[in-house]
Image 1 (cartoon, helix red, strand yellow):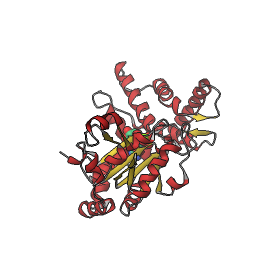
Image 2: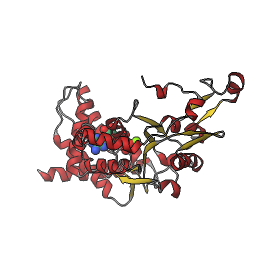
Image 3: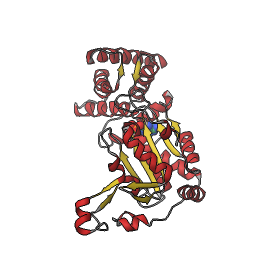
Image 4: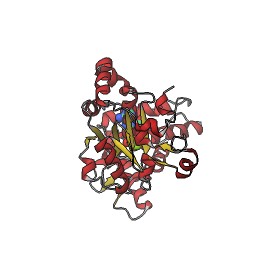
Length: 328
Ligand SMILES: Nc1ncnc2c1ncn2[C@@H]1O[C@H](COP(=O)(O)OP(=O)(O)O)[C@@H](O)[C@H]1O
Ligand SMILES: [Mg+2]
């Protein structure tokens, strides 16, 4: 078991020694080799080799990373998979799902004054370390970092700048490499990152994969979800979904397009629908419905109602069908 996560006391934490985390990254890169790392990531995500190299080249020199891209393009999975394969400690990473009401003390941890007064500062419950303190010597994943309020961003900045987390005057050493994920700033419910924070990260972008690759991803992942169902998926259906995603992605009226996740599930749920109905193949009408049910909530743009979105999706779906039928 890892002792560094087994509730250290405040005095132990205050005496903690620095850890050169980027050196650990370089050591792993040397030992494993980049091929093995790419192969490991490739078992979960396709087509992101270049992005992986961008991330590793930053981490190897102690640069924090900010993975930016639309919803459902694999940001969180990529951050976790890289932290896992680097395996800097046990556990290899600490992950925080950021939200707009997150307080600075949720990140740093806080001293419970009542416990401290009764049982002393070194009682295991007097101070419960927060993620910024627990991440010492590992990767810290901050998922959806742009949901952090400016107030919490400031707490993070202090840890990044000084390598110390300050809790009511006590300074605790914390060395970690951060992989943050985030949506581009036009998405709702997000804050702009302060310049000081943005300046401390390398921004690595993931974009929607080319159509053929997207088709492959959809087929691959949907097959995993329908593994217990006896139904063969026609490749053409994945082609329609990939074409549809690209048509919408190209449309300048649209601010947020269907995610890879929604494409995968549109196929998997259409397949399970066909199977439940006792049919041997997915009907176009069922696929159309599954497209709407899986993608509607994601589509953002100049629409005044959900009905308009349904009409829009219907239209694009018909266009995609036509394109794919003309391809053969
Ligand atoms: N390039 C890809 N290759 C394979 N699967 C992918 C890819 N991109 C996304 N996915 C799948 O889509 C889903 C959403 O990924 P996730 O990491 O949660 O996205 P995000 O954090 O960007 O919203 C996951 O199940 C993932 O397996
Ligand atoms: Mg995510």
